[in-house]
Image (cartoon, rainbow, N blue to C red; front, side, top):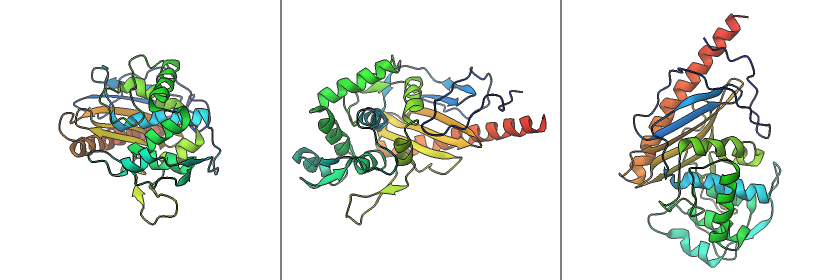
Length: 292
């Protein structure tokens, strides 16, 4: 039996992510379709499932958008950051059909921290593209920065073509996205944002719920959902089980149906997989304590 007490660290945001060797034969509830990958900080990979070929990842793309933005414009916990002016493009895109957007008024100035919330919590596509233009002058130049970051992280099967994930041409694998998850969760502000249950446009009453309804179940503390017709349902998540930080990615659930069905499918799959990880970790930790 593999005991988790050796080398298992706390997994606090901002601390280095420690990777151990792969753990053999872990009994997890892997999805029956698509692909997935799971790793535990300080323990190692719990395995992958499905063929790791590049597929559309939909709004999971926004994790890289946030990673690039926070790398170039770092925030401290509690800081609002610079004010970002809503341009006419983002305002006009507020009510695009068939897209996930957030209503924004032209010329309104919103702090970077809140913009990140509006992008990551309710998954505002128009906010993602606005942040790209704000940072790089155009979405095209920002995409170059996204791909450069992917290269640095060793994401060799990933190609970004937009900041929001609305494009089916943005593709990756579960294993590649897990590499990004390890780095993104180290940023305390990112970790805070993806753990929020909801958010709102400053000064407005309406609140937008987090698309990740697995929050606070089986230790889940974020990170991001994504869904589309071609992409199906996709999920990158982080959870804490005892002292352990778990990171996982699921892609391609109910692909080819519709975004609603895909999201429902990946949330169901994600709950089963995260629950099985929680159960395994709890069992191993109890066994380790009993053996002391």
